[in-house]
Amino acid sequence: MSGHSKWSTIKRKKGAADAKRGAIFTRLAREITIAARDGGDPDTNFRLRLAVEKARGENMPKDNIERAVKKGTGEDKDAAVFEELTLEGYGPHGSAIMVSCVTDNRVRTVSDVRHAFSKSGGNMAEAGAVGWQFDRKSYFSFPSSAMAFDKAFELGVEAGADDVVDSGDEIEIYGPVEAFKTIIDTLQKAGIQPAEAGLRLIAKQEIELGVEDTMSVMKVVEHLEDLDDVQDVYHNVKVSDEALAALENA
Image 1 (cartoon, rainbow, N blue to C red):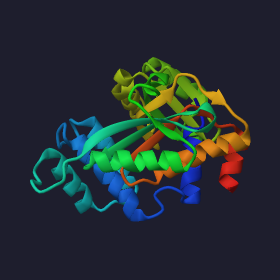
Image 2 (cartoon, rainbow, N blue to C red):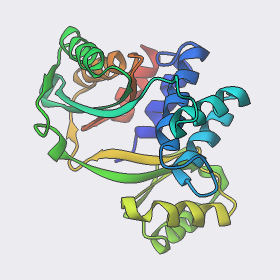
Image 3 (cartoon, rainbow, N blue to C red):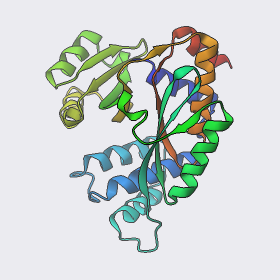
Image 4 (tube, one colour):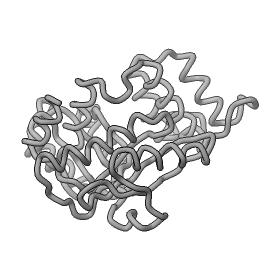
């Protein structure tokens, strides 16, 4: 299951996704707005707290954060109404792809995602056609330098994690959705502030492809990630070290 954080690192280095600071802020603001629908207090709304912390980590202005919260709580009566939308599709070589969106216009988003699939060698699928291949999991990652792997493994298991993975520069922890708060609390008590923390769709079984075929799938992923309404893209391809190196140099 490893490789998710490495791909994120490559994207940041290349600037392939969220090339403009404004695009980053737009996605962060939508994430905050959606989270704030369950309450505007980060102390009691853990999802909101994570979204705000992520925004602060990207140096998003305080005013932007506050506006996004007000949109979610309904205090801003003129704000657009956003909804979460998960779309499914197939990439090249039998790959399965899930696309998580936040949108104020469902028709536009579906059209944009369908076009991105088709122009890069994939195609949209009906609801449920691909989703059964994924499980929703709690996900955390932090630098390996922050804690020895054995200690991280012990903490993760005690907190209810399903798996703790040494990915080289980073340690990744996967767990049930219901264990999210327990795991994050355990990490923070141990002095660990995760670089990433949230809920992800994780493939039940990954497929292995050659370098060129992997790159063709990741081209679809990149096209989807570039869309304004797309928050996250998940797939079932195991990205090898050779493929990661090729993607970084592409």
